Length: 389
Ligand SMILES: [Zn+2]
Image (cartoon, rainbow, N blue to C red; front, side, top):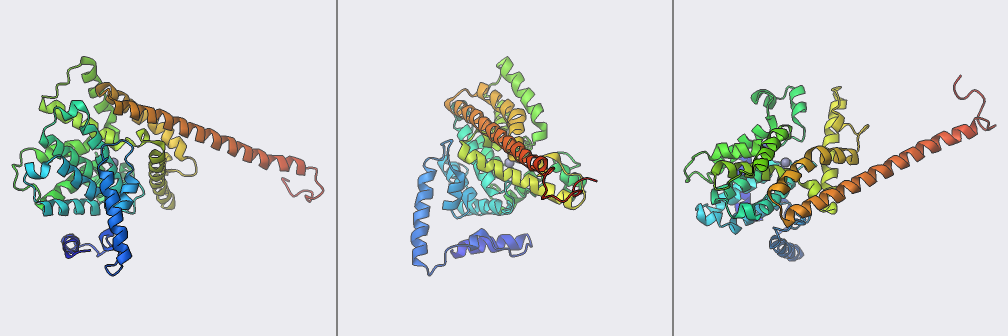
């Protein structure tokens, strides 16, 4: 690790008066290990190769995160800024940009099974895929691209790993601060604005409505407001009145694209999709465990005693993901949309089969439990009166 990274991290930690926790940037291979360098170079080479295919829908963000030693969000976002020429166009200071991205990555909680920097990197990669779709690529301005990528990278910043109802019922200060409304999303937005200011990345550019637009994109990821966005989207599609030369319409499409990117896990190939499903369930169940421990009402979604990965996924796909992606496919009827819908259908089938097998095996198990009891009721081995009475 060089002094530059050390400087960035120490300054960052000091500026927030945080405990000097062991950053992932301090986990480098020791400098006196020549093999380490060989491996490091090899891994960097593989990561670079992966970035050449960053627009592929089957991009494996988990592998990319391993190859970059846990720095997927920094490397991927920097690469995309570079690919779009945003650094030259907006005269961005590369040191400030790196520093800003490191701050973002570090502000995600790596102990969250799901809402961590890898999820943010995954959403940013998905967002890039959507930005490349013909309708968007032909019409989006550089400002739209900059904001779209920034919003994707920061959309869950400082996520605590629990949901809004949990923050409300535990009287968390964030719930009071944002009046119980889009509590998390408001916090992600305000955190992003704070880091933008701290990094000084865009201070040389006219302010305009950048902060508000960034906020409006991040706030669109509030899943509890999905129906509002969906009905507006449907109305536009029914009327066929979306005109992407109109700034307001382009912004709305960016909102829809970010919403899709945020919940696109079930539309990824099974191998990736399954991992995300397990991670999000782990985070839900962890919340349920805390609720149980503190005698709070256990959120049904978070109850490991009555829920399962398959059940959660089947419901999520049917009521949240599918309705959104059906409309997105109407808007952008491309090969990518067809691929996503086909993965969604296969993954749904996969979880249904999994649930059927699980139900069959648990009914077999309870049958087996009952069967010996019936046999044993006449058995001489069991002492009389050992059951019932
Ligand atoms: Zn998210």
